[in-house]
Image (cartoon, rainbow, N blue to C red):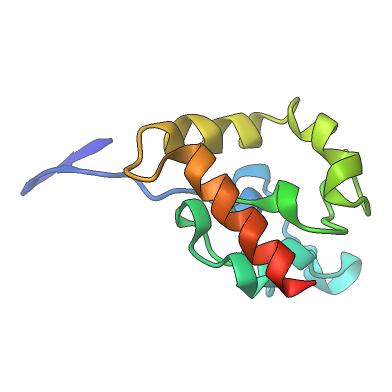
Length: 116
């Protein structure tokens, strides 16, 4: 949190590409040479955990371009996500939100199931 003239304001929640500085989002520094990561354009999860597209739910998207776990399905890559600082940051930030991390996780699963 930071202070503003009107009181306390919340700092902006970062998407994975902002936190990891990968540049794989549209118009990012690495998008032209390495491609756009599916997470940054996955609109079905827009707004989950306060992120843009799936930017704060990257672990739920097939074929994300995470440097450590490239091109895997969520079930196969998720154990690696448990080691990711960004995953834990989102989990910690959302724990105190009105909906909580687990409730939004369940909602994500419903959205993804309906998409299939």
